[in-house]
Length: 139
Image 1 (cartoon, rainbow, N blue to C red):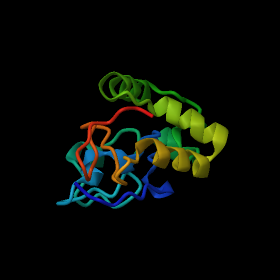
Image 2: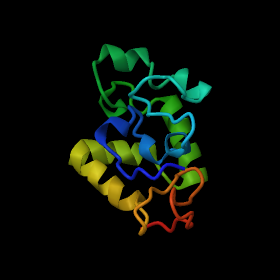
Image 3: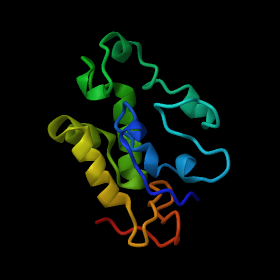
Image 4: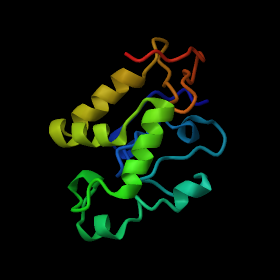
């Protein structure tokens, strides 16, 4: 896994996913640079994401789903339920924090939450640190 511990604004996806904690972003080979960046080296399902390419969101010129007139849509609810169940993380909660606190404060809190004591980033999918492989315990 990657040792880069810098989660920045460009890594926050329209759905509220913090791509900086995704195993595809943290891997060393064929690293994904997040939903907001080039599709090169992304997992196939990410290149076809119905949320990223949502016509309603694009017509509203929104950056995040929380500004969409259909928020939260069926697809976002499904994704949120899966992540809450499997990974103890909620896209809808993330979007609420972004809307309430602003993107800068959200990114700051994400860095605090997902950075291991050793300085590595905790992988949301594996629940371990990208550097020391220590198991994640929610802060």
